[in-house]
Image 1: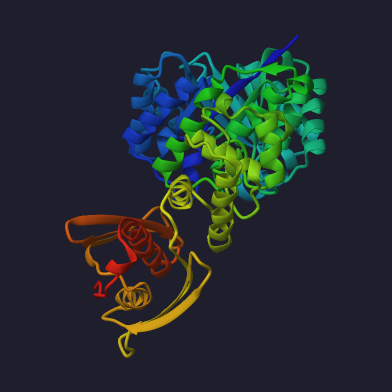
Image 2 (image 1 turned 180 degrees about the horizontal axis):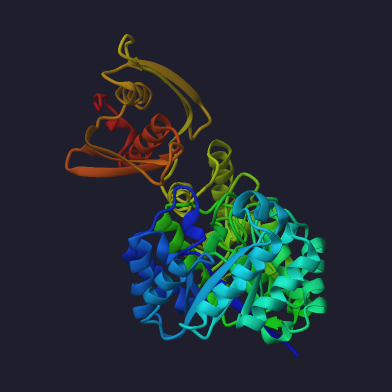
Length: 515
């Protein structure tokens, strides 16, 4: 038998408290719509008394959210509860979330109350909130560092006063999963009327244990998890919604739980929250990070391509990601490269593939990641049907505002002869072309030269396209390389090789091409 776990999302309240995160009313409404599509049970839309903007945001969220419960946070103060009740008037399902600290640290230094005074204040706040709504959640701030016996006394009292949900937060992220699980179990065993309320866990990530602590709470009787999209929140953040939900789903054999989350909406929700808050998701973030379903190791790629479950415990489509990524790097093996080329629509003989793979390794040594556009450029060059009368072995160019542009090229002719020459030019590419012309010695006129970045970044592959003319005939050349000079030299040689395929040796007379 599975236990229903309610997902309480506080992205719009606790999440927005992240330093640097700020959402306007329209953005909060849009996120709330998406959270409802995601299937969260409760949306904590804000802290109405804190500002006119928060008050309005809660009001506007109430207008658009029809299925989920909309919650407003308050302190255990009458005016806070009044503000929340007013803001929540339009909600189809409303909840007021109120409470006080319960640790001696909070009571002594922050609230300056005795234990009895704080308990009495909490009871009165719950009773007052019940005048406006039937659903009242009570938070016991800093429960992790509170005296367990006192914690249980307060919980029993506020449930008697009408609290329907009891929030037992690890406010400072101090507890370990074993300790937090024990704390939840202690409450379940020592509060006589605990069965009249839903126990909720709210954990912070100061020690990186928020998700683990929340799951420990679930395993010991909690039926609501409070979390945020991407784990955003004050200090180190809150329990990550996507991580805790997918942990319960993937390891249902351990947790025996179910939620109402439409997991296919997770990635879309993550992207929206990241974009609107300006808080970027780290690449190695579980579930929604750019690398969460990316494989660059040749061993991993080979395994995933043969059977996804060898290295993936989650189907990426189950969280709204269309497919795993095979990241092609110098560590990628033949299987990964061949697979990606096939996905791009290419098929090769073994010899053709080896030529492409050899070029791939050369490029992968120069840049961190080889993209689809890089592969397509490599294929175009490696599989060219043009007879290679001349092949570029080496090119070197020197340029600068106080230097005369000079280039040296080394070519290999189809008969095996190695030829070297140098030349000056108006720029480094012009010098390269002049040096090539001194060796090839074929009449032509350069009529077009263009260059563009194939991919993004400082290590992007540059693709050079040129056109040369002899008489009425025009010949195209194209090459891609991370070095613009190399790409320019190879593109020019490709065009010259096409020209040489069409002319007789006696026609080889010299003129200079200029760039």
